[in-house]
Amino acid sequence: NKIIKVPIADIIIDYRATSDLISNACKRGQKRYKVSGICEITENIIVALEESDNNEIPEYIFAQFHSLNEDEIISEISKRYFNGFSFIGAFQYGDSKWGLFVKCA
Image (cartoon, rainbow, N blue to C red; front, top):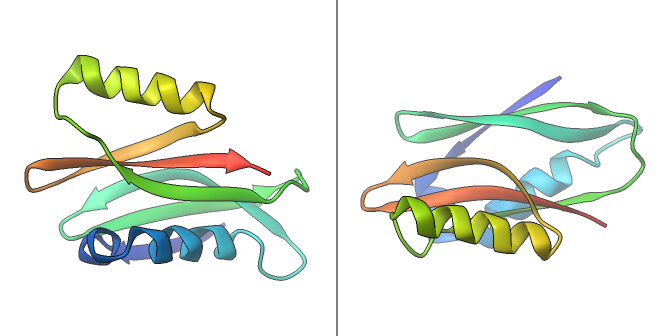
């Protein structure tokens, strides 16, 4: 397995670059990896990767939820699912909630 520590501030400043960091870590070398979970610890997100037998190259994306309302977050997760993105996990930053999603190519 692999562990990646990503500062939350980096995600907020440039979510695309930090999303690419996770995606690229999953396809380095001969082995393929997938995110098995995330954990918020103080000012960082710990991303756990595990080996994957799947040859598909996943695309990971951090995305901010538009609301902190529970029903609206559930609705957003469902909409993203029907657009091909699976929900991995979420974290809080100040007054905003962010999620990590994956789309397999």
